[in-house]
Image (cartoon, rainbow, N blue to C red; front, side, top):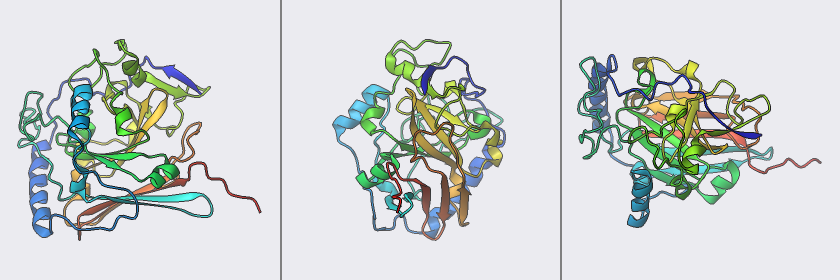
Length: 346
């Protein structure tokens, strides 16, 4: 596989200013009703035995400060507020089943007091302070570290349990409050080096080609692993990377744009993958708040996921996301071929 620098800007619209989203005011009112109903219906937390994995309470002030200094924000957060747990099993055919369980419905996360709508951007402005004293455009990030066994089998080191109060561009698709479960193949410390010093488009996004990033770590966002057919490897063949989605501490985002729908209709999870320095940084189910809140059981499943010129055998071939209103927990289940596992021939 060749690590190829990109020059063509994909058809995403993230670079434009944050603007109004049709129907968002009505959506915000419904989310307030839903959230009050959800919180009134059950306790704020429940215990759950952890088969595998470990939660993170607040990280050391030194690590947090390093994250702020390098990226401009704290990636560590406090994942213990989600009462997280995980499990990993491998069968005799080298197939793993991995789960991550999180209490998202009752999570104490900020909502914009005024959502974008026909009359303007509401609380979703760069200079705002309506979400915990910061702009509601800031994501609320939290690191949940997975067990050594989980990483050994799946290649995943930790989950970024990340909340987008305003959503993010492309606004016509993702411009409403939603969760991003960034499941990273690198450590949190390695993420701190994925940045664009001297090359930021705005406080949240790296500038992109034809702008030339002045540092190696900035240029690495736009170097993707490709096969001899010039196709990006280790992502589904329907995915298209958008060069204007390079987020410090993360990667350039790639997904099937044809599955994206008008934001008012978005409900089911969408799979995103992160590209950085010729490799895959993260694998991410992204879903709106209403999928994991309220009084209705929700389930989404996808099977038969295939990847172009796959060299990372442990990438999930199927996954499901389910929400149980009886306890407010969301469960992510992934299945795939265990890393380095080979079936012995009799």
